[in-house]
Length: 112
Length: 112
View 1 (cartoon, rainbow over the protein chains, first blue to last red):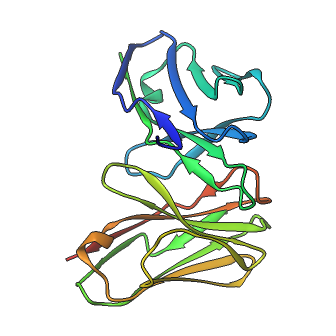
View 2: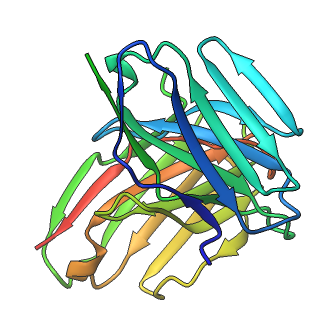
């Protein structure tokens, strides 16, 4: 089982719709969770962090965390073509080194 | 001002050569990392330093050697380059060990 799993996509949504990106993780002791956006040929850019169960909203982005189910998601409301990118889920492991482990990413394509 | 900067941005070299990639962060962060992103876009951690001390050393060939002369710098030296080393190498830093990471612009290494 991979440590952090994401559906690779592509996930295609029409402009203005809600995009829902999902991530599961294997380390039950993980405490810190992050979503990064990576445009083609660019570096990963942090867009959301979440540490507690529930929802966290920032503009059009909402991160959702359910530690019991070992599940974290990212919702993008009113999706725009400029949101088209690969979204990477990252999880801090619970070991002494707190490794930041990435999923393989989900490619989102927002259709105009 | 670039927060995490890497040089060079592109590196094309022949098999068997030795090369170095430099990284500097001006954020005052304690922790720095090297990640490798392969052609399938998977970001895999290679090394992590916390206050100049090596804390993560993943299963990476001995040909790869990191060096952290001070908290703001983490360089990566690669000996006897092989075709399979071709990838994008990202440097990143975190304020402290268990928080989010901020990435440099990446170094695209091509071994021919």
